[in-house]
Image (cartoon, rainbow, N blue to C red; front, side):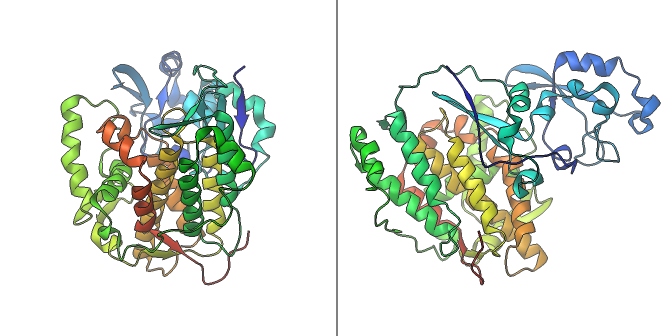
Length: 425
């Protein structure tokens, strides 16, 4: 029986901060709800909508869909001045697009069930405000339906592109990895990533039928060696393959929103030279998320360590623990190790945006507000969007994400340094 499981460490209550309503992403609305928009006299109650395009019709993935219009800047056209939704006010909660009703929750589908976590771009999720998400199970189930992925509780899972392990061993490994990212004030996030990579090295070297027993007896957790953690002098010194992976993670920031949603063969081929240019980590690109030009080498030629204030570290650890618990972005899409490698690349993107903010504000350290902002950018626009490895150079990305040596190089590209004061859990 397929079940929906909710991350036990989440709290949520919508505070109408409007962060999710003021983004450049497209908000798809169901056809039957478009009809309700057409039949409503909006200008009578909301004069600001006079002359506005309430929605438009676009093509995504070969299908015709409707998306809500935009008001000023990136604001949803239905976002009122008081931070509330005009559709909700006028037609009720059920009339809102399903995307809006689901936020911030989403599910990662695996063979044994749907693991529901949340978008860490949401300020309430970041700060653990509101009641536990587990106590909102009925409300979540109503807007995040079970997936249609087949229920196969005994199916093996890919640890790497070429290695299958039993699901029971995969669950034990996930618990071990989650425990590594604990709130120990004497460990840095970089060291915890290194411990996790070392655990993966041991897991990959263990016969699949013995892996669960090895984890249970502590063989993977005992005397973990941080390994080759010495950072590159700058990210520009990393091997081209590692830089290419990071460029692919950051790449959506160089493109208009959803411009890769429906790529044909020739369009995909035109992306490769642009990826190569970004992978050189030189020059300037127009950042959609930072709303300005980014001098890539100015950011990446700086020392590899980015110092975080003590208050910022717990947020990043909770974010990583949630992703490991949820098996996202792997699920049934990526092998377990490849998904973890992508977590490192996403973390590097967070550090990249935090560096940019520190440089802009002339800050020596990335404080909590800086990290919250960086996590919001990555979560809203990179980590929860369609990945390039599903459309461009699939075989190359599959092999590169599954490479242990390249994962170590990804970790060495951009690290966070210990705080000047030990972090408090």
